[in-house]
Amino acid sequence: MLILYDGTTSVCAIKVRLALAEKGLEFESRNIDLRKGEQFAVDYLKLNPNAVVPTLVDNGEVILESSIIIQYLEDLTNENPLLPKTPLNRAKMRFWLKRVDNPIHPSAGILTHATAFRPSFLEKTPEEQKEHLAKIPDKARRARQEAVYRDGLRAEIVGTAIRTFDNFIRDLEFDLKTHDFIAGPDYSLADVAVTPYINRLEALKLLDVWRHVAPRVINWFEQIRQRPSFQSAIVAYLTDSDILHFKNIDDSCAARARELLEER
Ligand SMILES: N[C@@H](CCC(=O)N[C@@H](CS)C(=O)NCC(=O)O)C(=O)O
Image 1 (cartoon, rainbow, N blue to C red):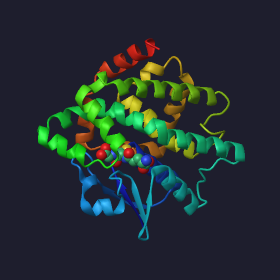
Image 2: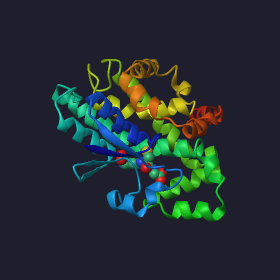
Image 3: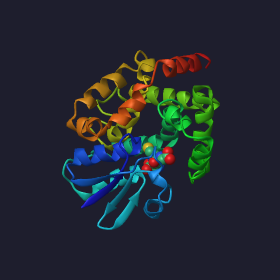
Image 4: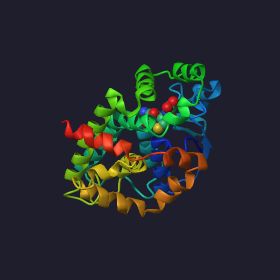
């Protein structure tokens, strides 16, 4: 049995849940509440010393890193293949996986923590805030979270995150000119990897910023939302508390993004 140490709104965990759904693989989801700091529990750190989700355990073997996990799932079964058919499209797929890992993933973290997760962090006492941040093993991640919890959308790194997404979306738009999916004519792991991040932009009311420059990306996302995996791996997992976190998002994130992109 596959066990997924999971996070309901975690973009990386969603990536894995989408791959599991698309491959038709059964698994047990064990939720790690990141807002409560369950990723720092001693037993969890033994599985994943980076204090992040997802972690996949297959027959006692631990597999880390979402992009590696989804490729592992692909290797487990030939059913519902998610690898492009040609070497060139496979290379394109791997390129998008790499780019999603970095710089897209940290950029998504910056924007999410500056908006959706900031209010509940600020409700903690100064000691609790300090304690939470001190437990984050990756110094760069800790510094990013500290900056956006403190300064919100005015943090300097927000500009870098928005510009990173701008380049990403424009490049996706370019690639979608020649094929229906991101790495060729068929749905692949590239679509799996990109979906949670475009969905995150939508949740942060940011996707509209690119509606006119990237109509193909918007159209691609509309198609992706119709897939059963979108419902089972994303929508069905949202708890009332998750919905509440994202309900607080107003238009200020989109307004800040427009302002930053005009400064370019
Ligand atoms: N490179 C890792 C990144 C995992 C990651 O950053 N996960 C986030 C959720 S999307 C997390 O667990 N964050 C914990 C925290 O913010 O303290 C992967 O792809 O698996």
